[in-house]
Structure formats: structure tokens, C-alpha cells
Length: 348
Image (cartoon, rainbow, N blue to C red; front, side, top):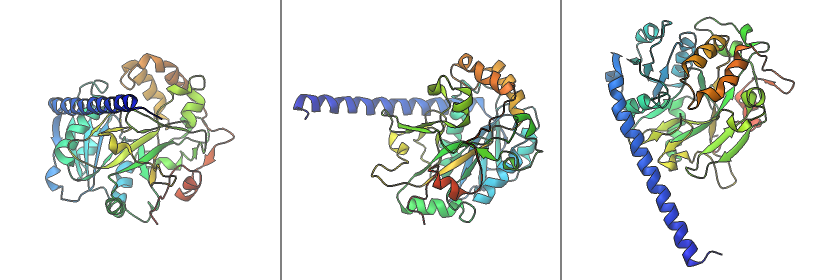
């Protein structure tokens, strides 16, 4: 049992931690405000955004292969407008996006790494356009799904979340991979990546709660199993909070893995029950990852300490087979829920 001195010290420590997080959030927002100078508007269709529209924000570079299906998938879910920063693509990505009637497009040649991996740019756009909207923040290799996603769209989901007093949807990123070597999973622009990325790891996931901000920290899957076998703590973080009823005072901290204010990280149940959650189907392991890994190993734009990940890039460049005896074929969301990878919570 704590005495009065210990209780006072605990209260002071909590107050200091809360103050530090407020300062950190304001610093991120200030960085994002300054980053607007790095963005050049290419196509601004934001005037078509209506009250209640669901928006999607993202930073892309050389994603023309994935974008047709990515946009189609999320349009079907109910996204009304996409606000996208193109980080100096040279594969036709910018021209493709500029031709889409529901896309507003910005361009930058600035450093992806120094912009907190694109989050500063996206946060500025969210401050300007996202306030009061339900906003998705995604990468081009992520496809959002959730319970009943094939029959209930995002307006139905966000309406239910509003009724439940929930301001965000938590997800786990589920790495998908082909049957054989990465180089064999060939698709054309517009094809569904899931036509070749049919397999996933059904288990081997580790979940912790980060004390400082209360966010989940999930690791595992094929990247932990194959690329970080000897150092699992360096495996990629899989938890994300991609769908948020946005407020201009919000800020992502590390990609979309955690947010400030810290109450926004409470996307999981603490009472022994379950809270609704979804999945980001991660289509990273298409054949182009081999050449992109060689490029990114040289560019060093995707990790805070990029040199530590040279072994990761080298393994990808070697064209590995990710499927193993425990891999499972992707079927439907009900099977994913039965494995504990997503949950309906109370959404019936």
C-alpha cells in the first residue's frame, strides 16, 4: 500500500509525463505547419469536399502499380476524397493521380525521412482539410478491411463508432505473401494484389501495451520470422490507428502506430471484453519490392537508423520464399476473426 509521499510522487510523475506529451504533440504540429512550404499544389479539388465526407490521406512514391486497385478498393468502402502527397515519383504515379476526379495532389522533392516519413506533410493536410471528418491515413500497400466490410461500408461503420462514443478504429497490419519466391507474384497495374498474395502467418504475434502513451505494440508475422529471427525486438511494428474522427489538434507520433493526445491510443478493451478492430492487408511483397529494396538501401529514407536494416534489404533482394508449413491461405474476414486478428466487438 502506498503512503502519502509515494502517492504524491506518483501524481507528480504522471503530471510531468502528461505535460511532456502535450509539448511533444505541439512540436509535431508545429513541424507539420512548417512542412507546408515543402509542398507544391498540383491538383486541388478539395473544394468538392462536403461535410460528412470520409477522407483518405497518404504519401506515395512510385506506386502506379498498386494505385488503381487501392483507389477502387477504398472507393467501394466509401472514401469520398483522397488527399495525396507525391514524393517525386518517376513512374507515372503523379500523372495517374492527377487524372482521378476524387484526388487532390501535392508534390514534394523534400526528404521523406526528415518529414518523419511523410507524416509531417500528411498532418498539415489533415490540419487544413480533415478537421471534423473521419479520416483514413494509409500507405499505398495497405488495404483496409474490418468485420462485415464486404456488405457494410465506411459510413455505416463510422456512424456506429460515433454512436458508441469511439473516435478511432485500431488495426493490425497483416503481411501477405505469395506461394513461391517474391519474383513470381507478377501483376499488372489495376490487378488485385490479393490474386497473387494469398498467404499469411496465422500466429506468432506478440502484443504489449506501451506504458508512456498507452498504445499497443504488436510484432510478428513473416518479417519477424524470416528477417529478424535473431533480433525480434527490431521487427516492424504492426499495430496502426488508420481511421480517426480527426481534430486539428491531433498528431501521429510514429507513422500511424500511435497518436497524441494519448487517449486516442485506447483502441482496445481493458475490461476483459473486445473492442472492434480491423486489419490492414499489407501488399508489400510484390516482385517490385526486390528492386525497391536495392533503391531504398541506397537512399536510406525508410528507417531512423537505416544502416541497421541492411540485412533486411539484403534478404529481400535475394528473392526469398516467405511461405512456410504454418502459413495459411487468406479466405474471409470471419476466419481472420476466429484467429484473433480482428474483432467485431459489439458490432453485430
